[in-house]
View: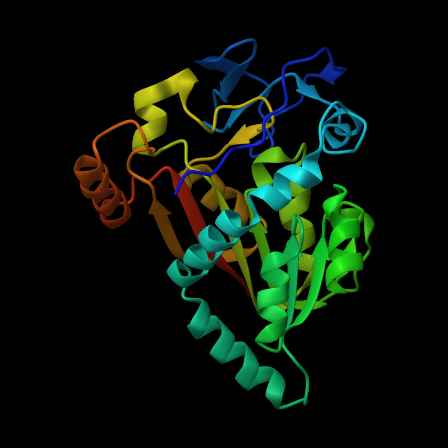
Length: 291
């Protein structure tokens, strides 16, 4: 399945140097040279990041109307493909097991299990979960939020997660698919996810995997080494961030051996199966649980 990736053309934006989001280190080594920009690697913990980084205001403006783009049209055009990939990721995460456990727990109080999808786009996944009797909330800063509210009747907030001030333990499940790599401060984000999750709740986070085969093969030409990604996590660095904020890692899955068009179909199928089996896929999902 081929999905177009949103990527903003390089343009002058205000930026500033930042310490490493994982360990606070301030010493970095060159890591990936891309077309017009670059990524560095923390000399202490190995987290790969764009540094200096554009400010949040500049990042948010990329997804708004009137910025020389139509992000909502992009999301709608790719909605079916994105939803299919999200559903496959949920299966890899053991979603049926999670759903059963949470519904058994919440049934004792007569409530529905509560899910928060951060970066929910047009809300297609939330509609699917609502049909499965979940109480659904979304967070989306792009114009897709208004579409999800107006066309689908969803509770979708247009502010970044931390600015919504959800009460403690508001949700049983938090989803973040291809979001954390876009954030200026992923550490504060993970801390806030932990706070809004109920004890025993689950956090499913999906992001490109810089420790995968494709990243090592293509380097600066890797399809996820794009201008919109401020961080490129490995299984090791993302697991470290989650555990440092109090989460227990329950499952790690990766997928994607070779991108479509880079090899004959037979070779791609073999590579994809191997990537999933041996953990060197292009994308990773970590299932974490709040203690």
